[in-house]
Length: 145
Image (cartoon, rainbow, N blue to C red):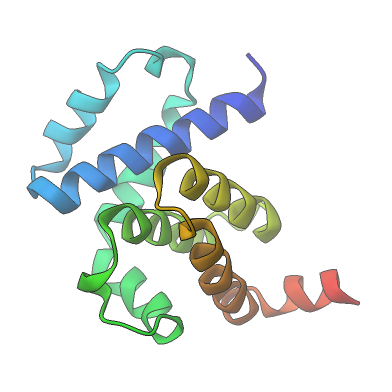
């Protein structure tokens, strides 16, 4: 399996873990254990999965504070799927600087298309475009010129 596919799977499994945490407030070790038992996990980039899951869940309040100015309702009013995707992508934009912002946004859009509501991907795209312009201003302006 290609590295790209393994990374995409890692993001999918991290999303499942974040979603599970939002709904159940289970402990991170329990969620890691549960998600790693899911069929197909062996094809995911395990290191990326752990980095994304732990990095996101250890910083939920800070990550939400980053994207909250770009949504037009309270964070807790978001669907759990959209909230989990925004948390995951915000973590990646802030901390995985070796991954181009466009890749992170495209992956988030694909997750929203696969797991979110009908127009969830448009919402996620709009929020992350504005957030990337703030968090990765140099990279975004270089890409636009």
